Image 1 (cartoon, rainbow, N blue to C red):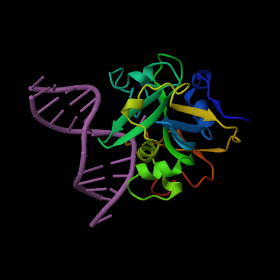
Image 2: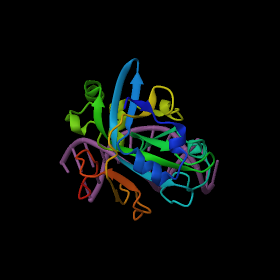
Image 3: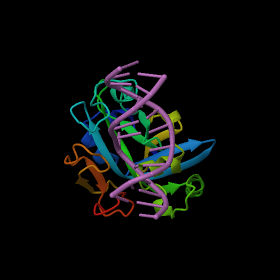
Length: 198
DNA sequence: AGCAAGATTAGC
DNA sequence: CTAATCTTGCTA
């Protein structure tokens, strides 16, 4: 199967279904003709205003506006003043939900990724961790609201066999840590997490 | 206008 | 385990 951009209808479904099918898809970013890409290995779901960990929990604000918009768009924001995190907006237009991309398996542009990551990192570590993969792919606030179905930032289906997905609690947050809304590529070494979760 | 908090990471 | 660092949103 040749590379194909994932259509908007893919994202207009229940978030956990999208999350399961997103593992194994390829996130691509092109800057000045240079392409970087990696297979999604780990991601977390943030669903609705009733999810205390979701940015939409306080209701609509200027910052989380993309979450309420149509599916298939990127929601990028700065966390802890240091790290950019990428989310994929899901569900129907008007319902706030998204999937945080936490780790990738580098496929293209490894040299460029290494250059962007100042601290030396082995190729397998280039895109491990939500804050690290945005640096490796060169994703910034400028990519907020980017259309993932068209443009320099997109998600492709390269025909990889859908991997088994392991569900675990979300990490790195301090509320609602018991919901098993973190999907990991079973047995893949590129999954983030500092301790036992690997 | 000022302040506290946060979906992280690296370093001791 | 804790510091670093800045945007957002709430309070005055």
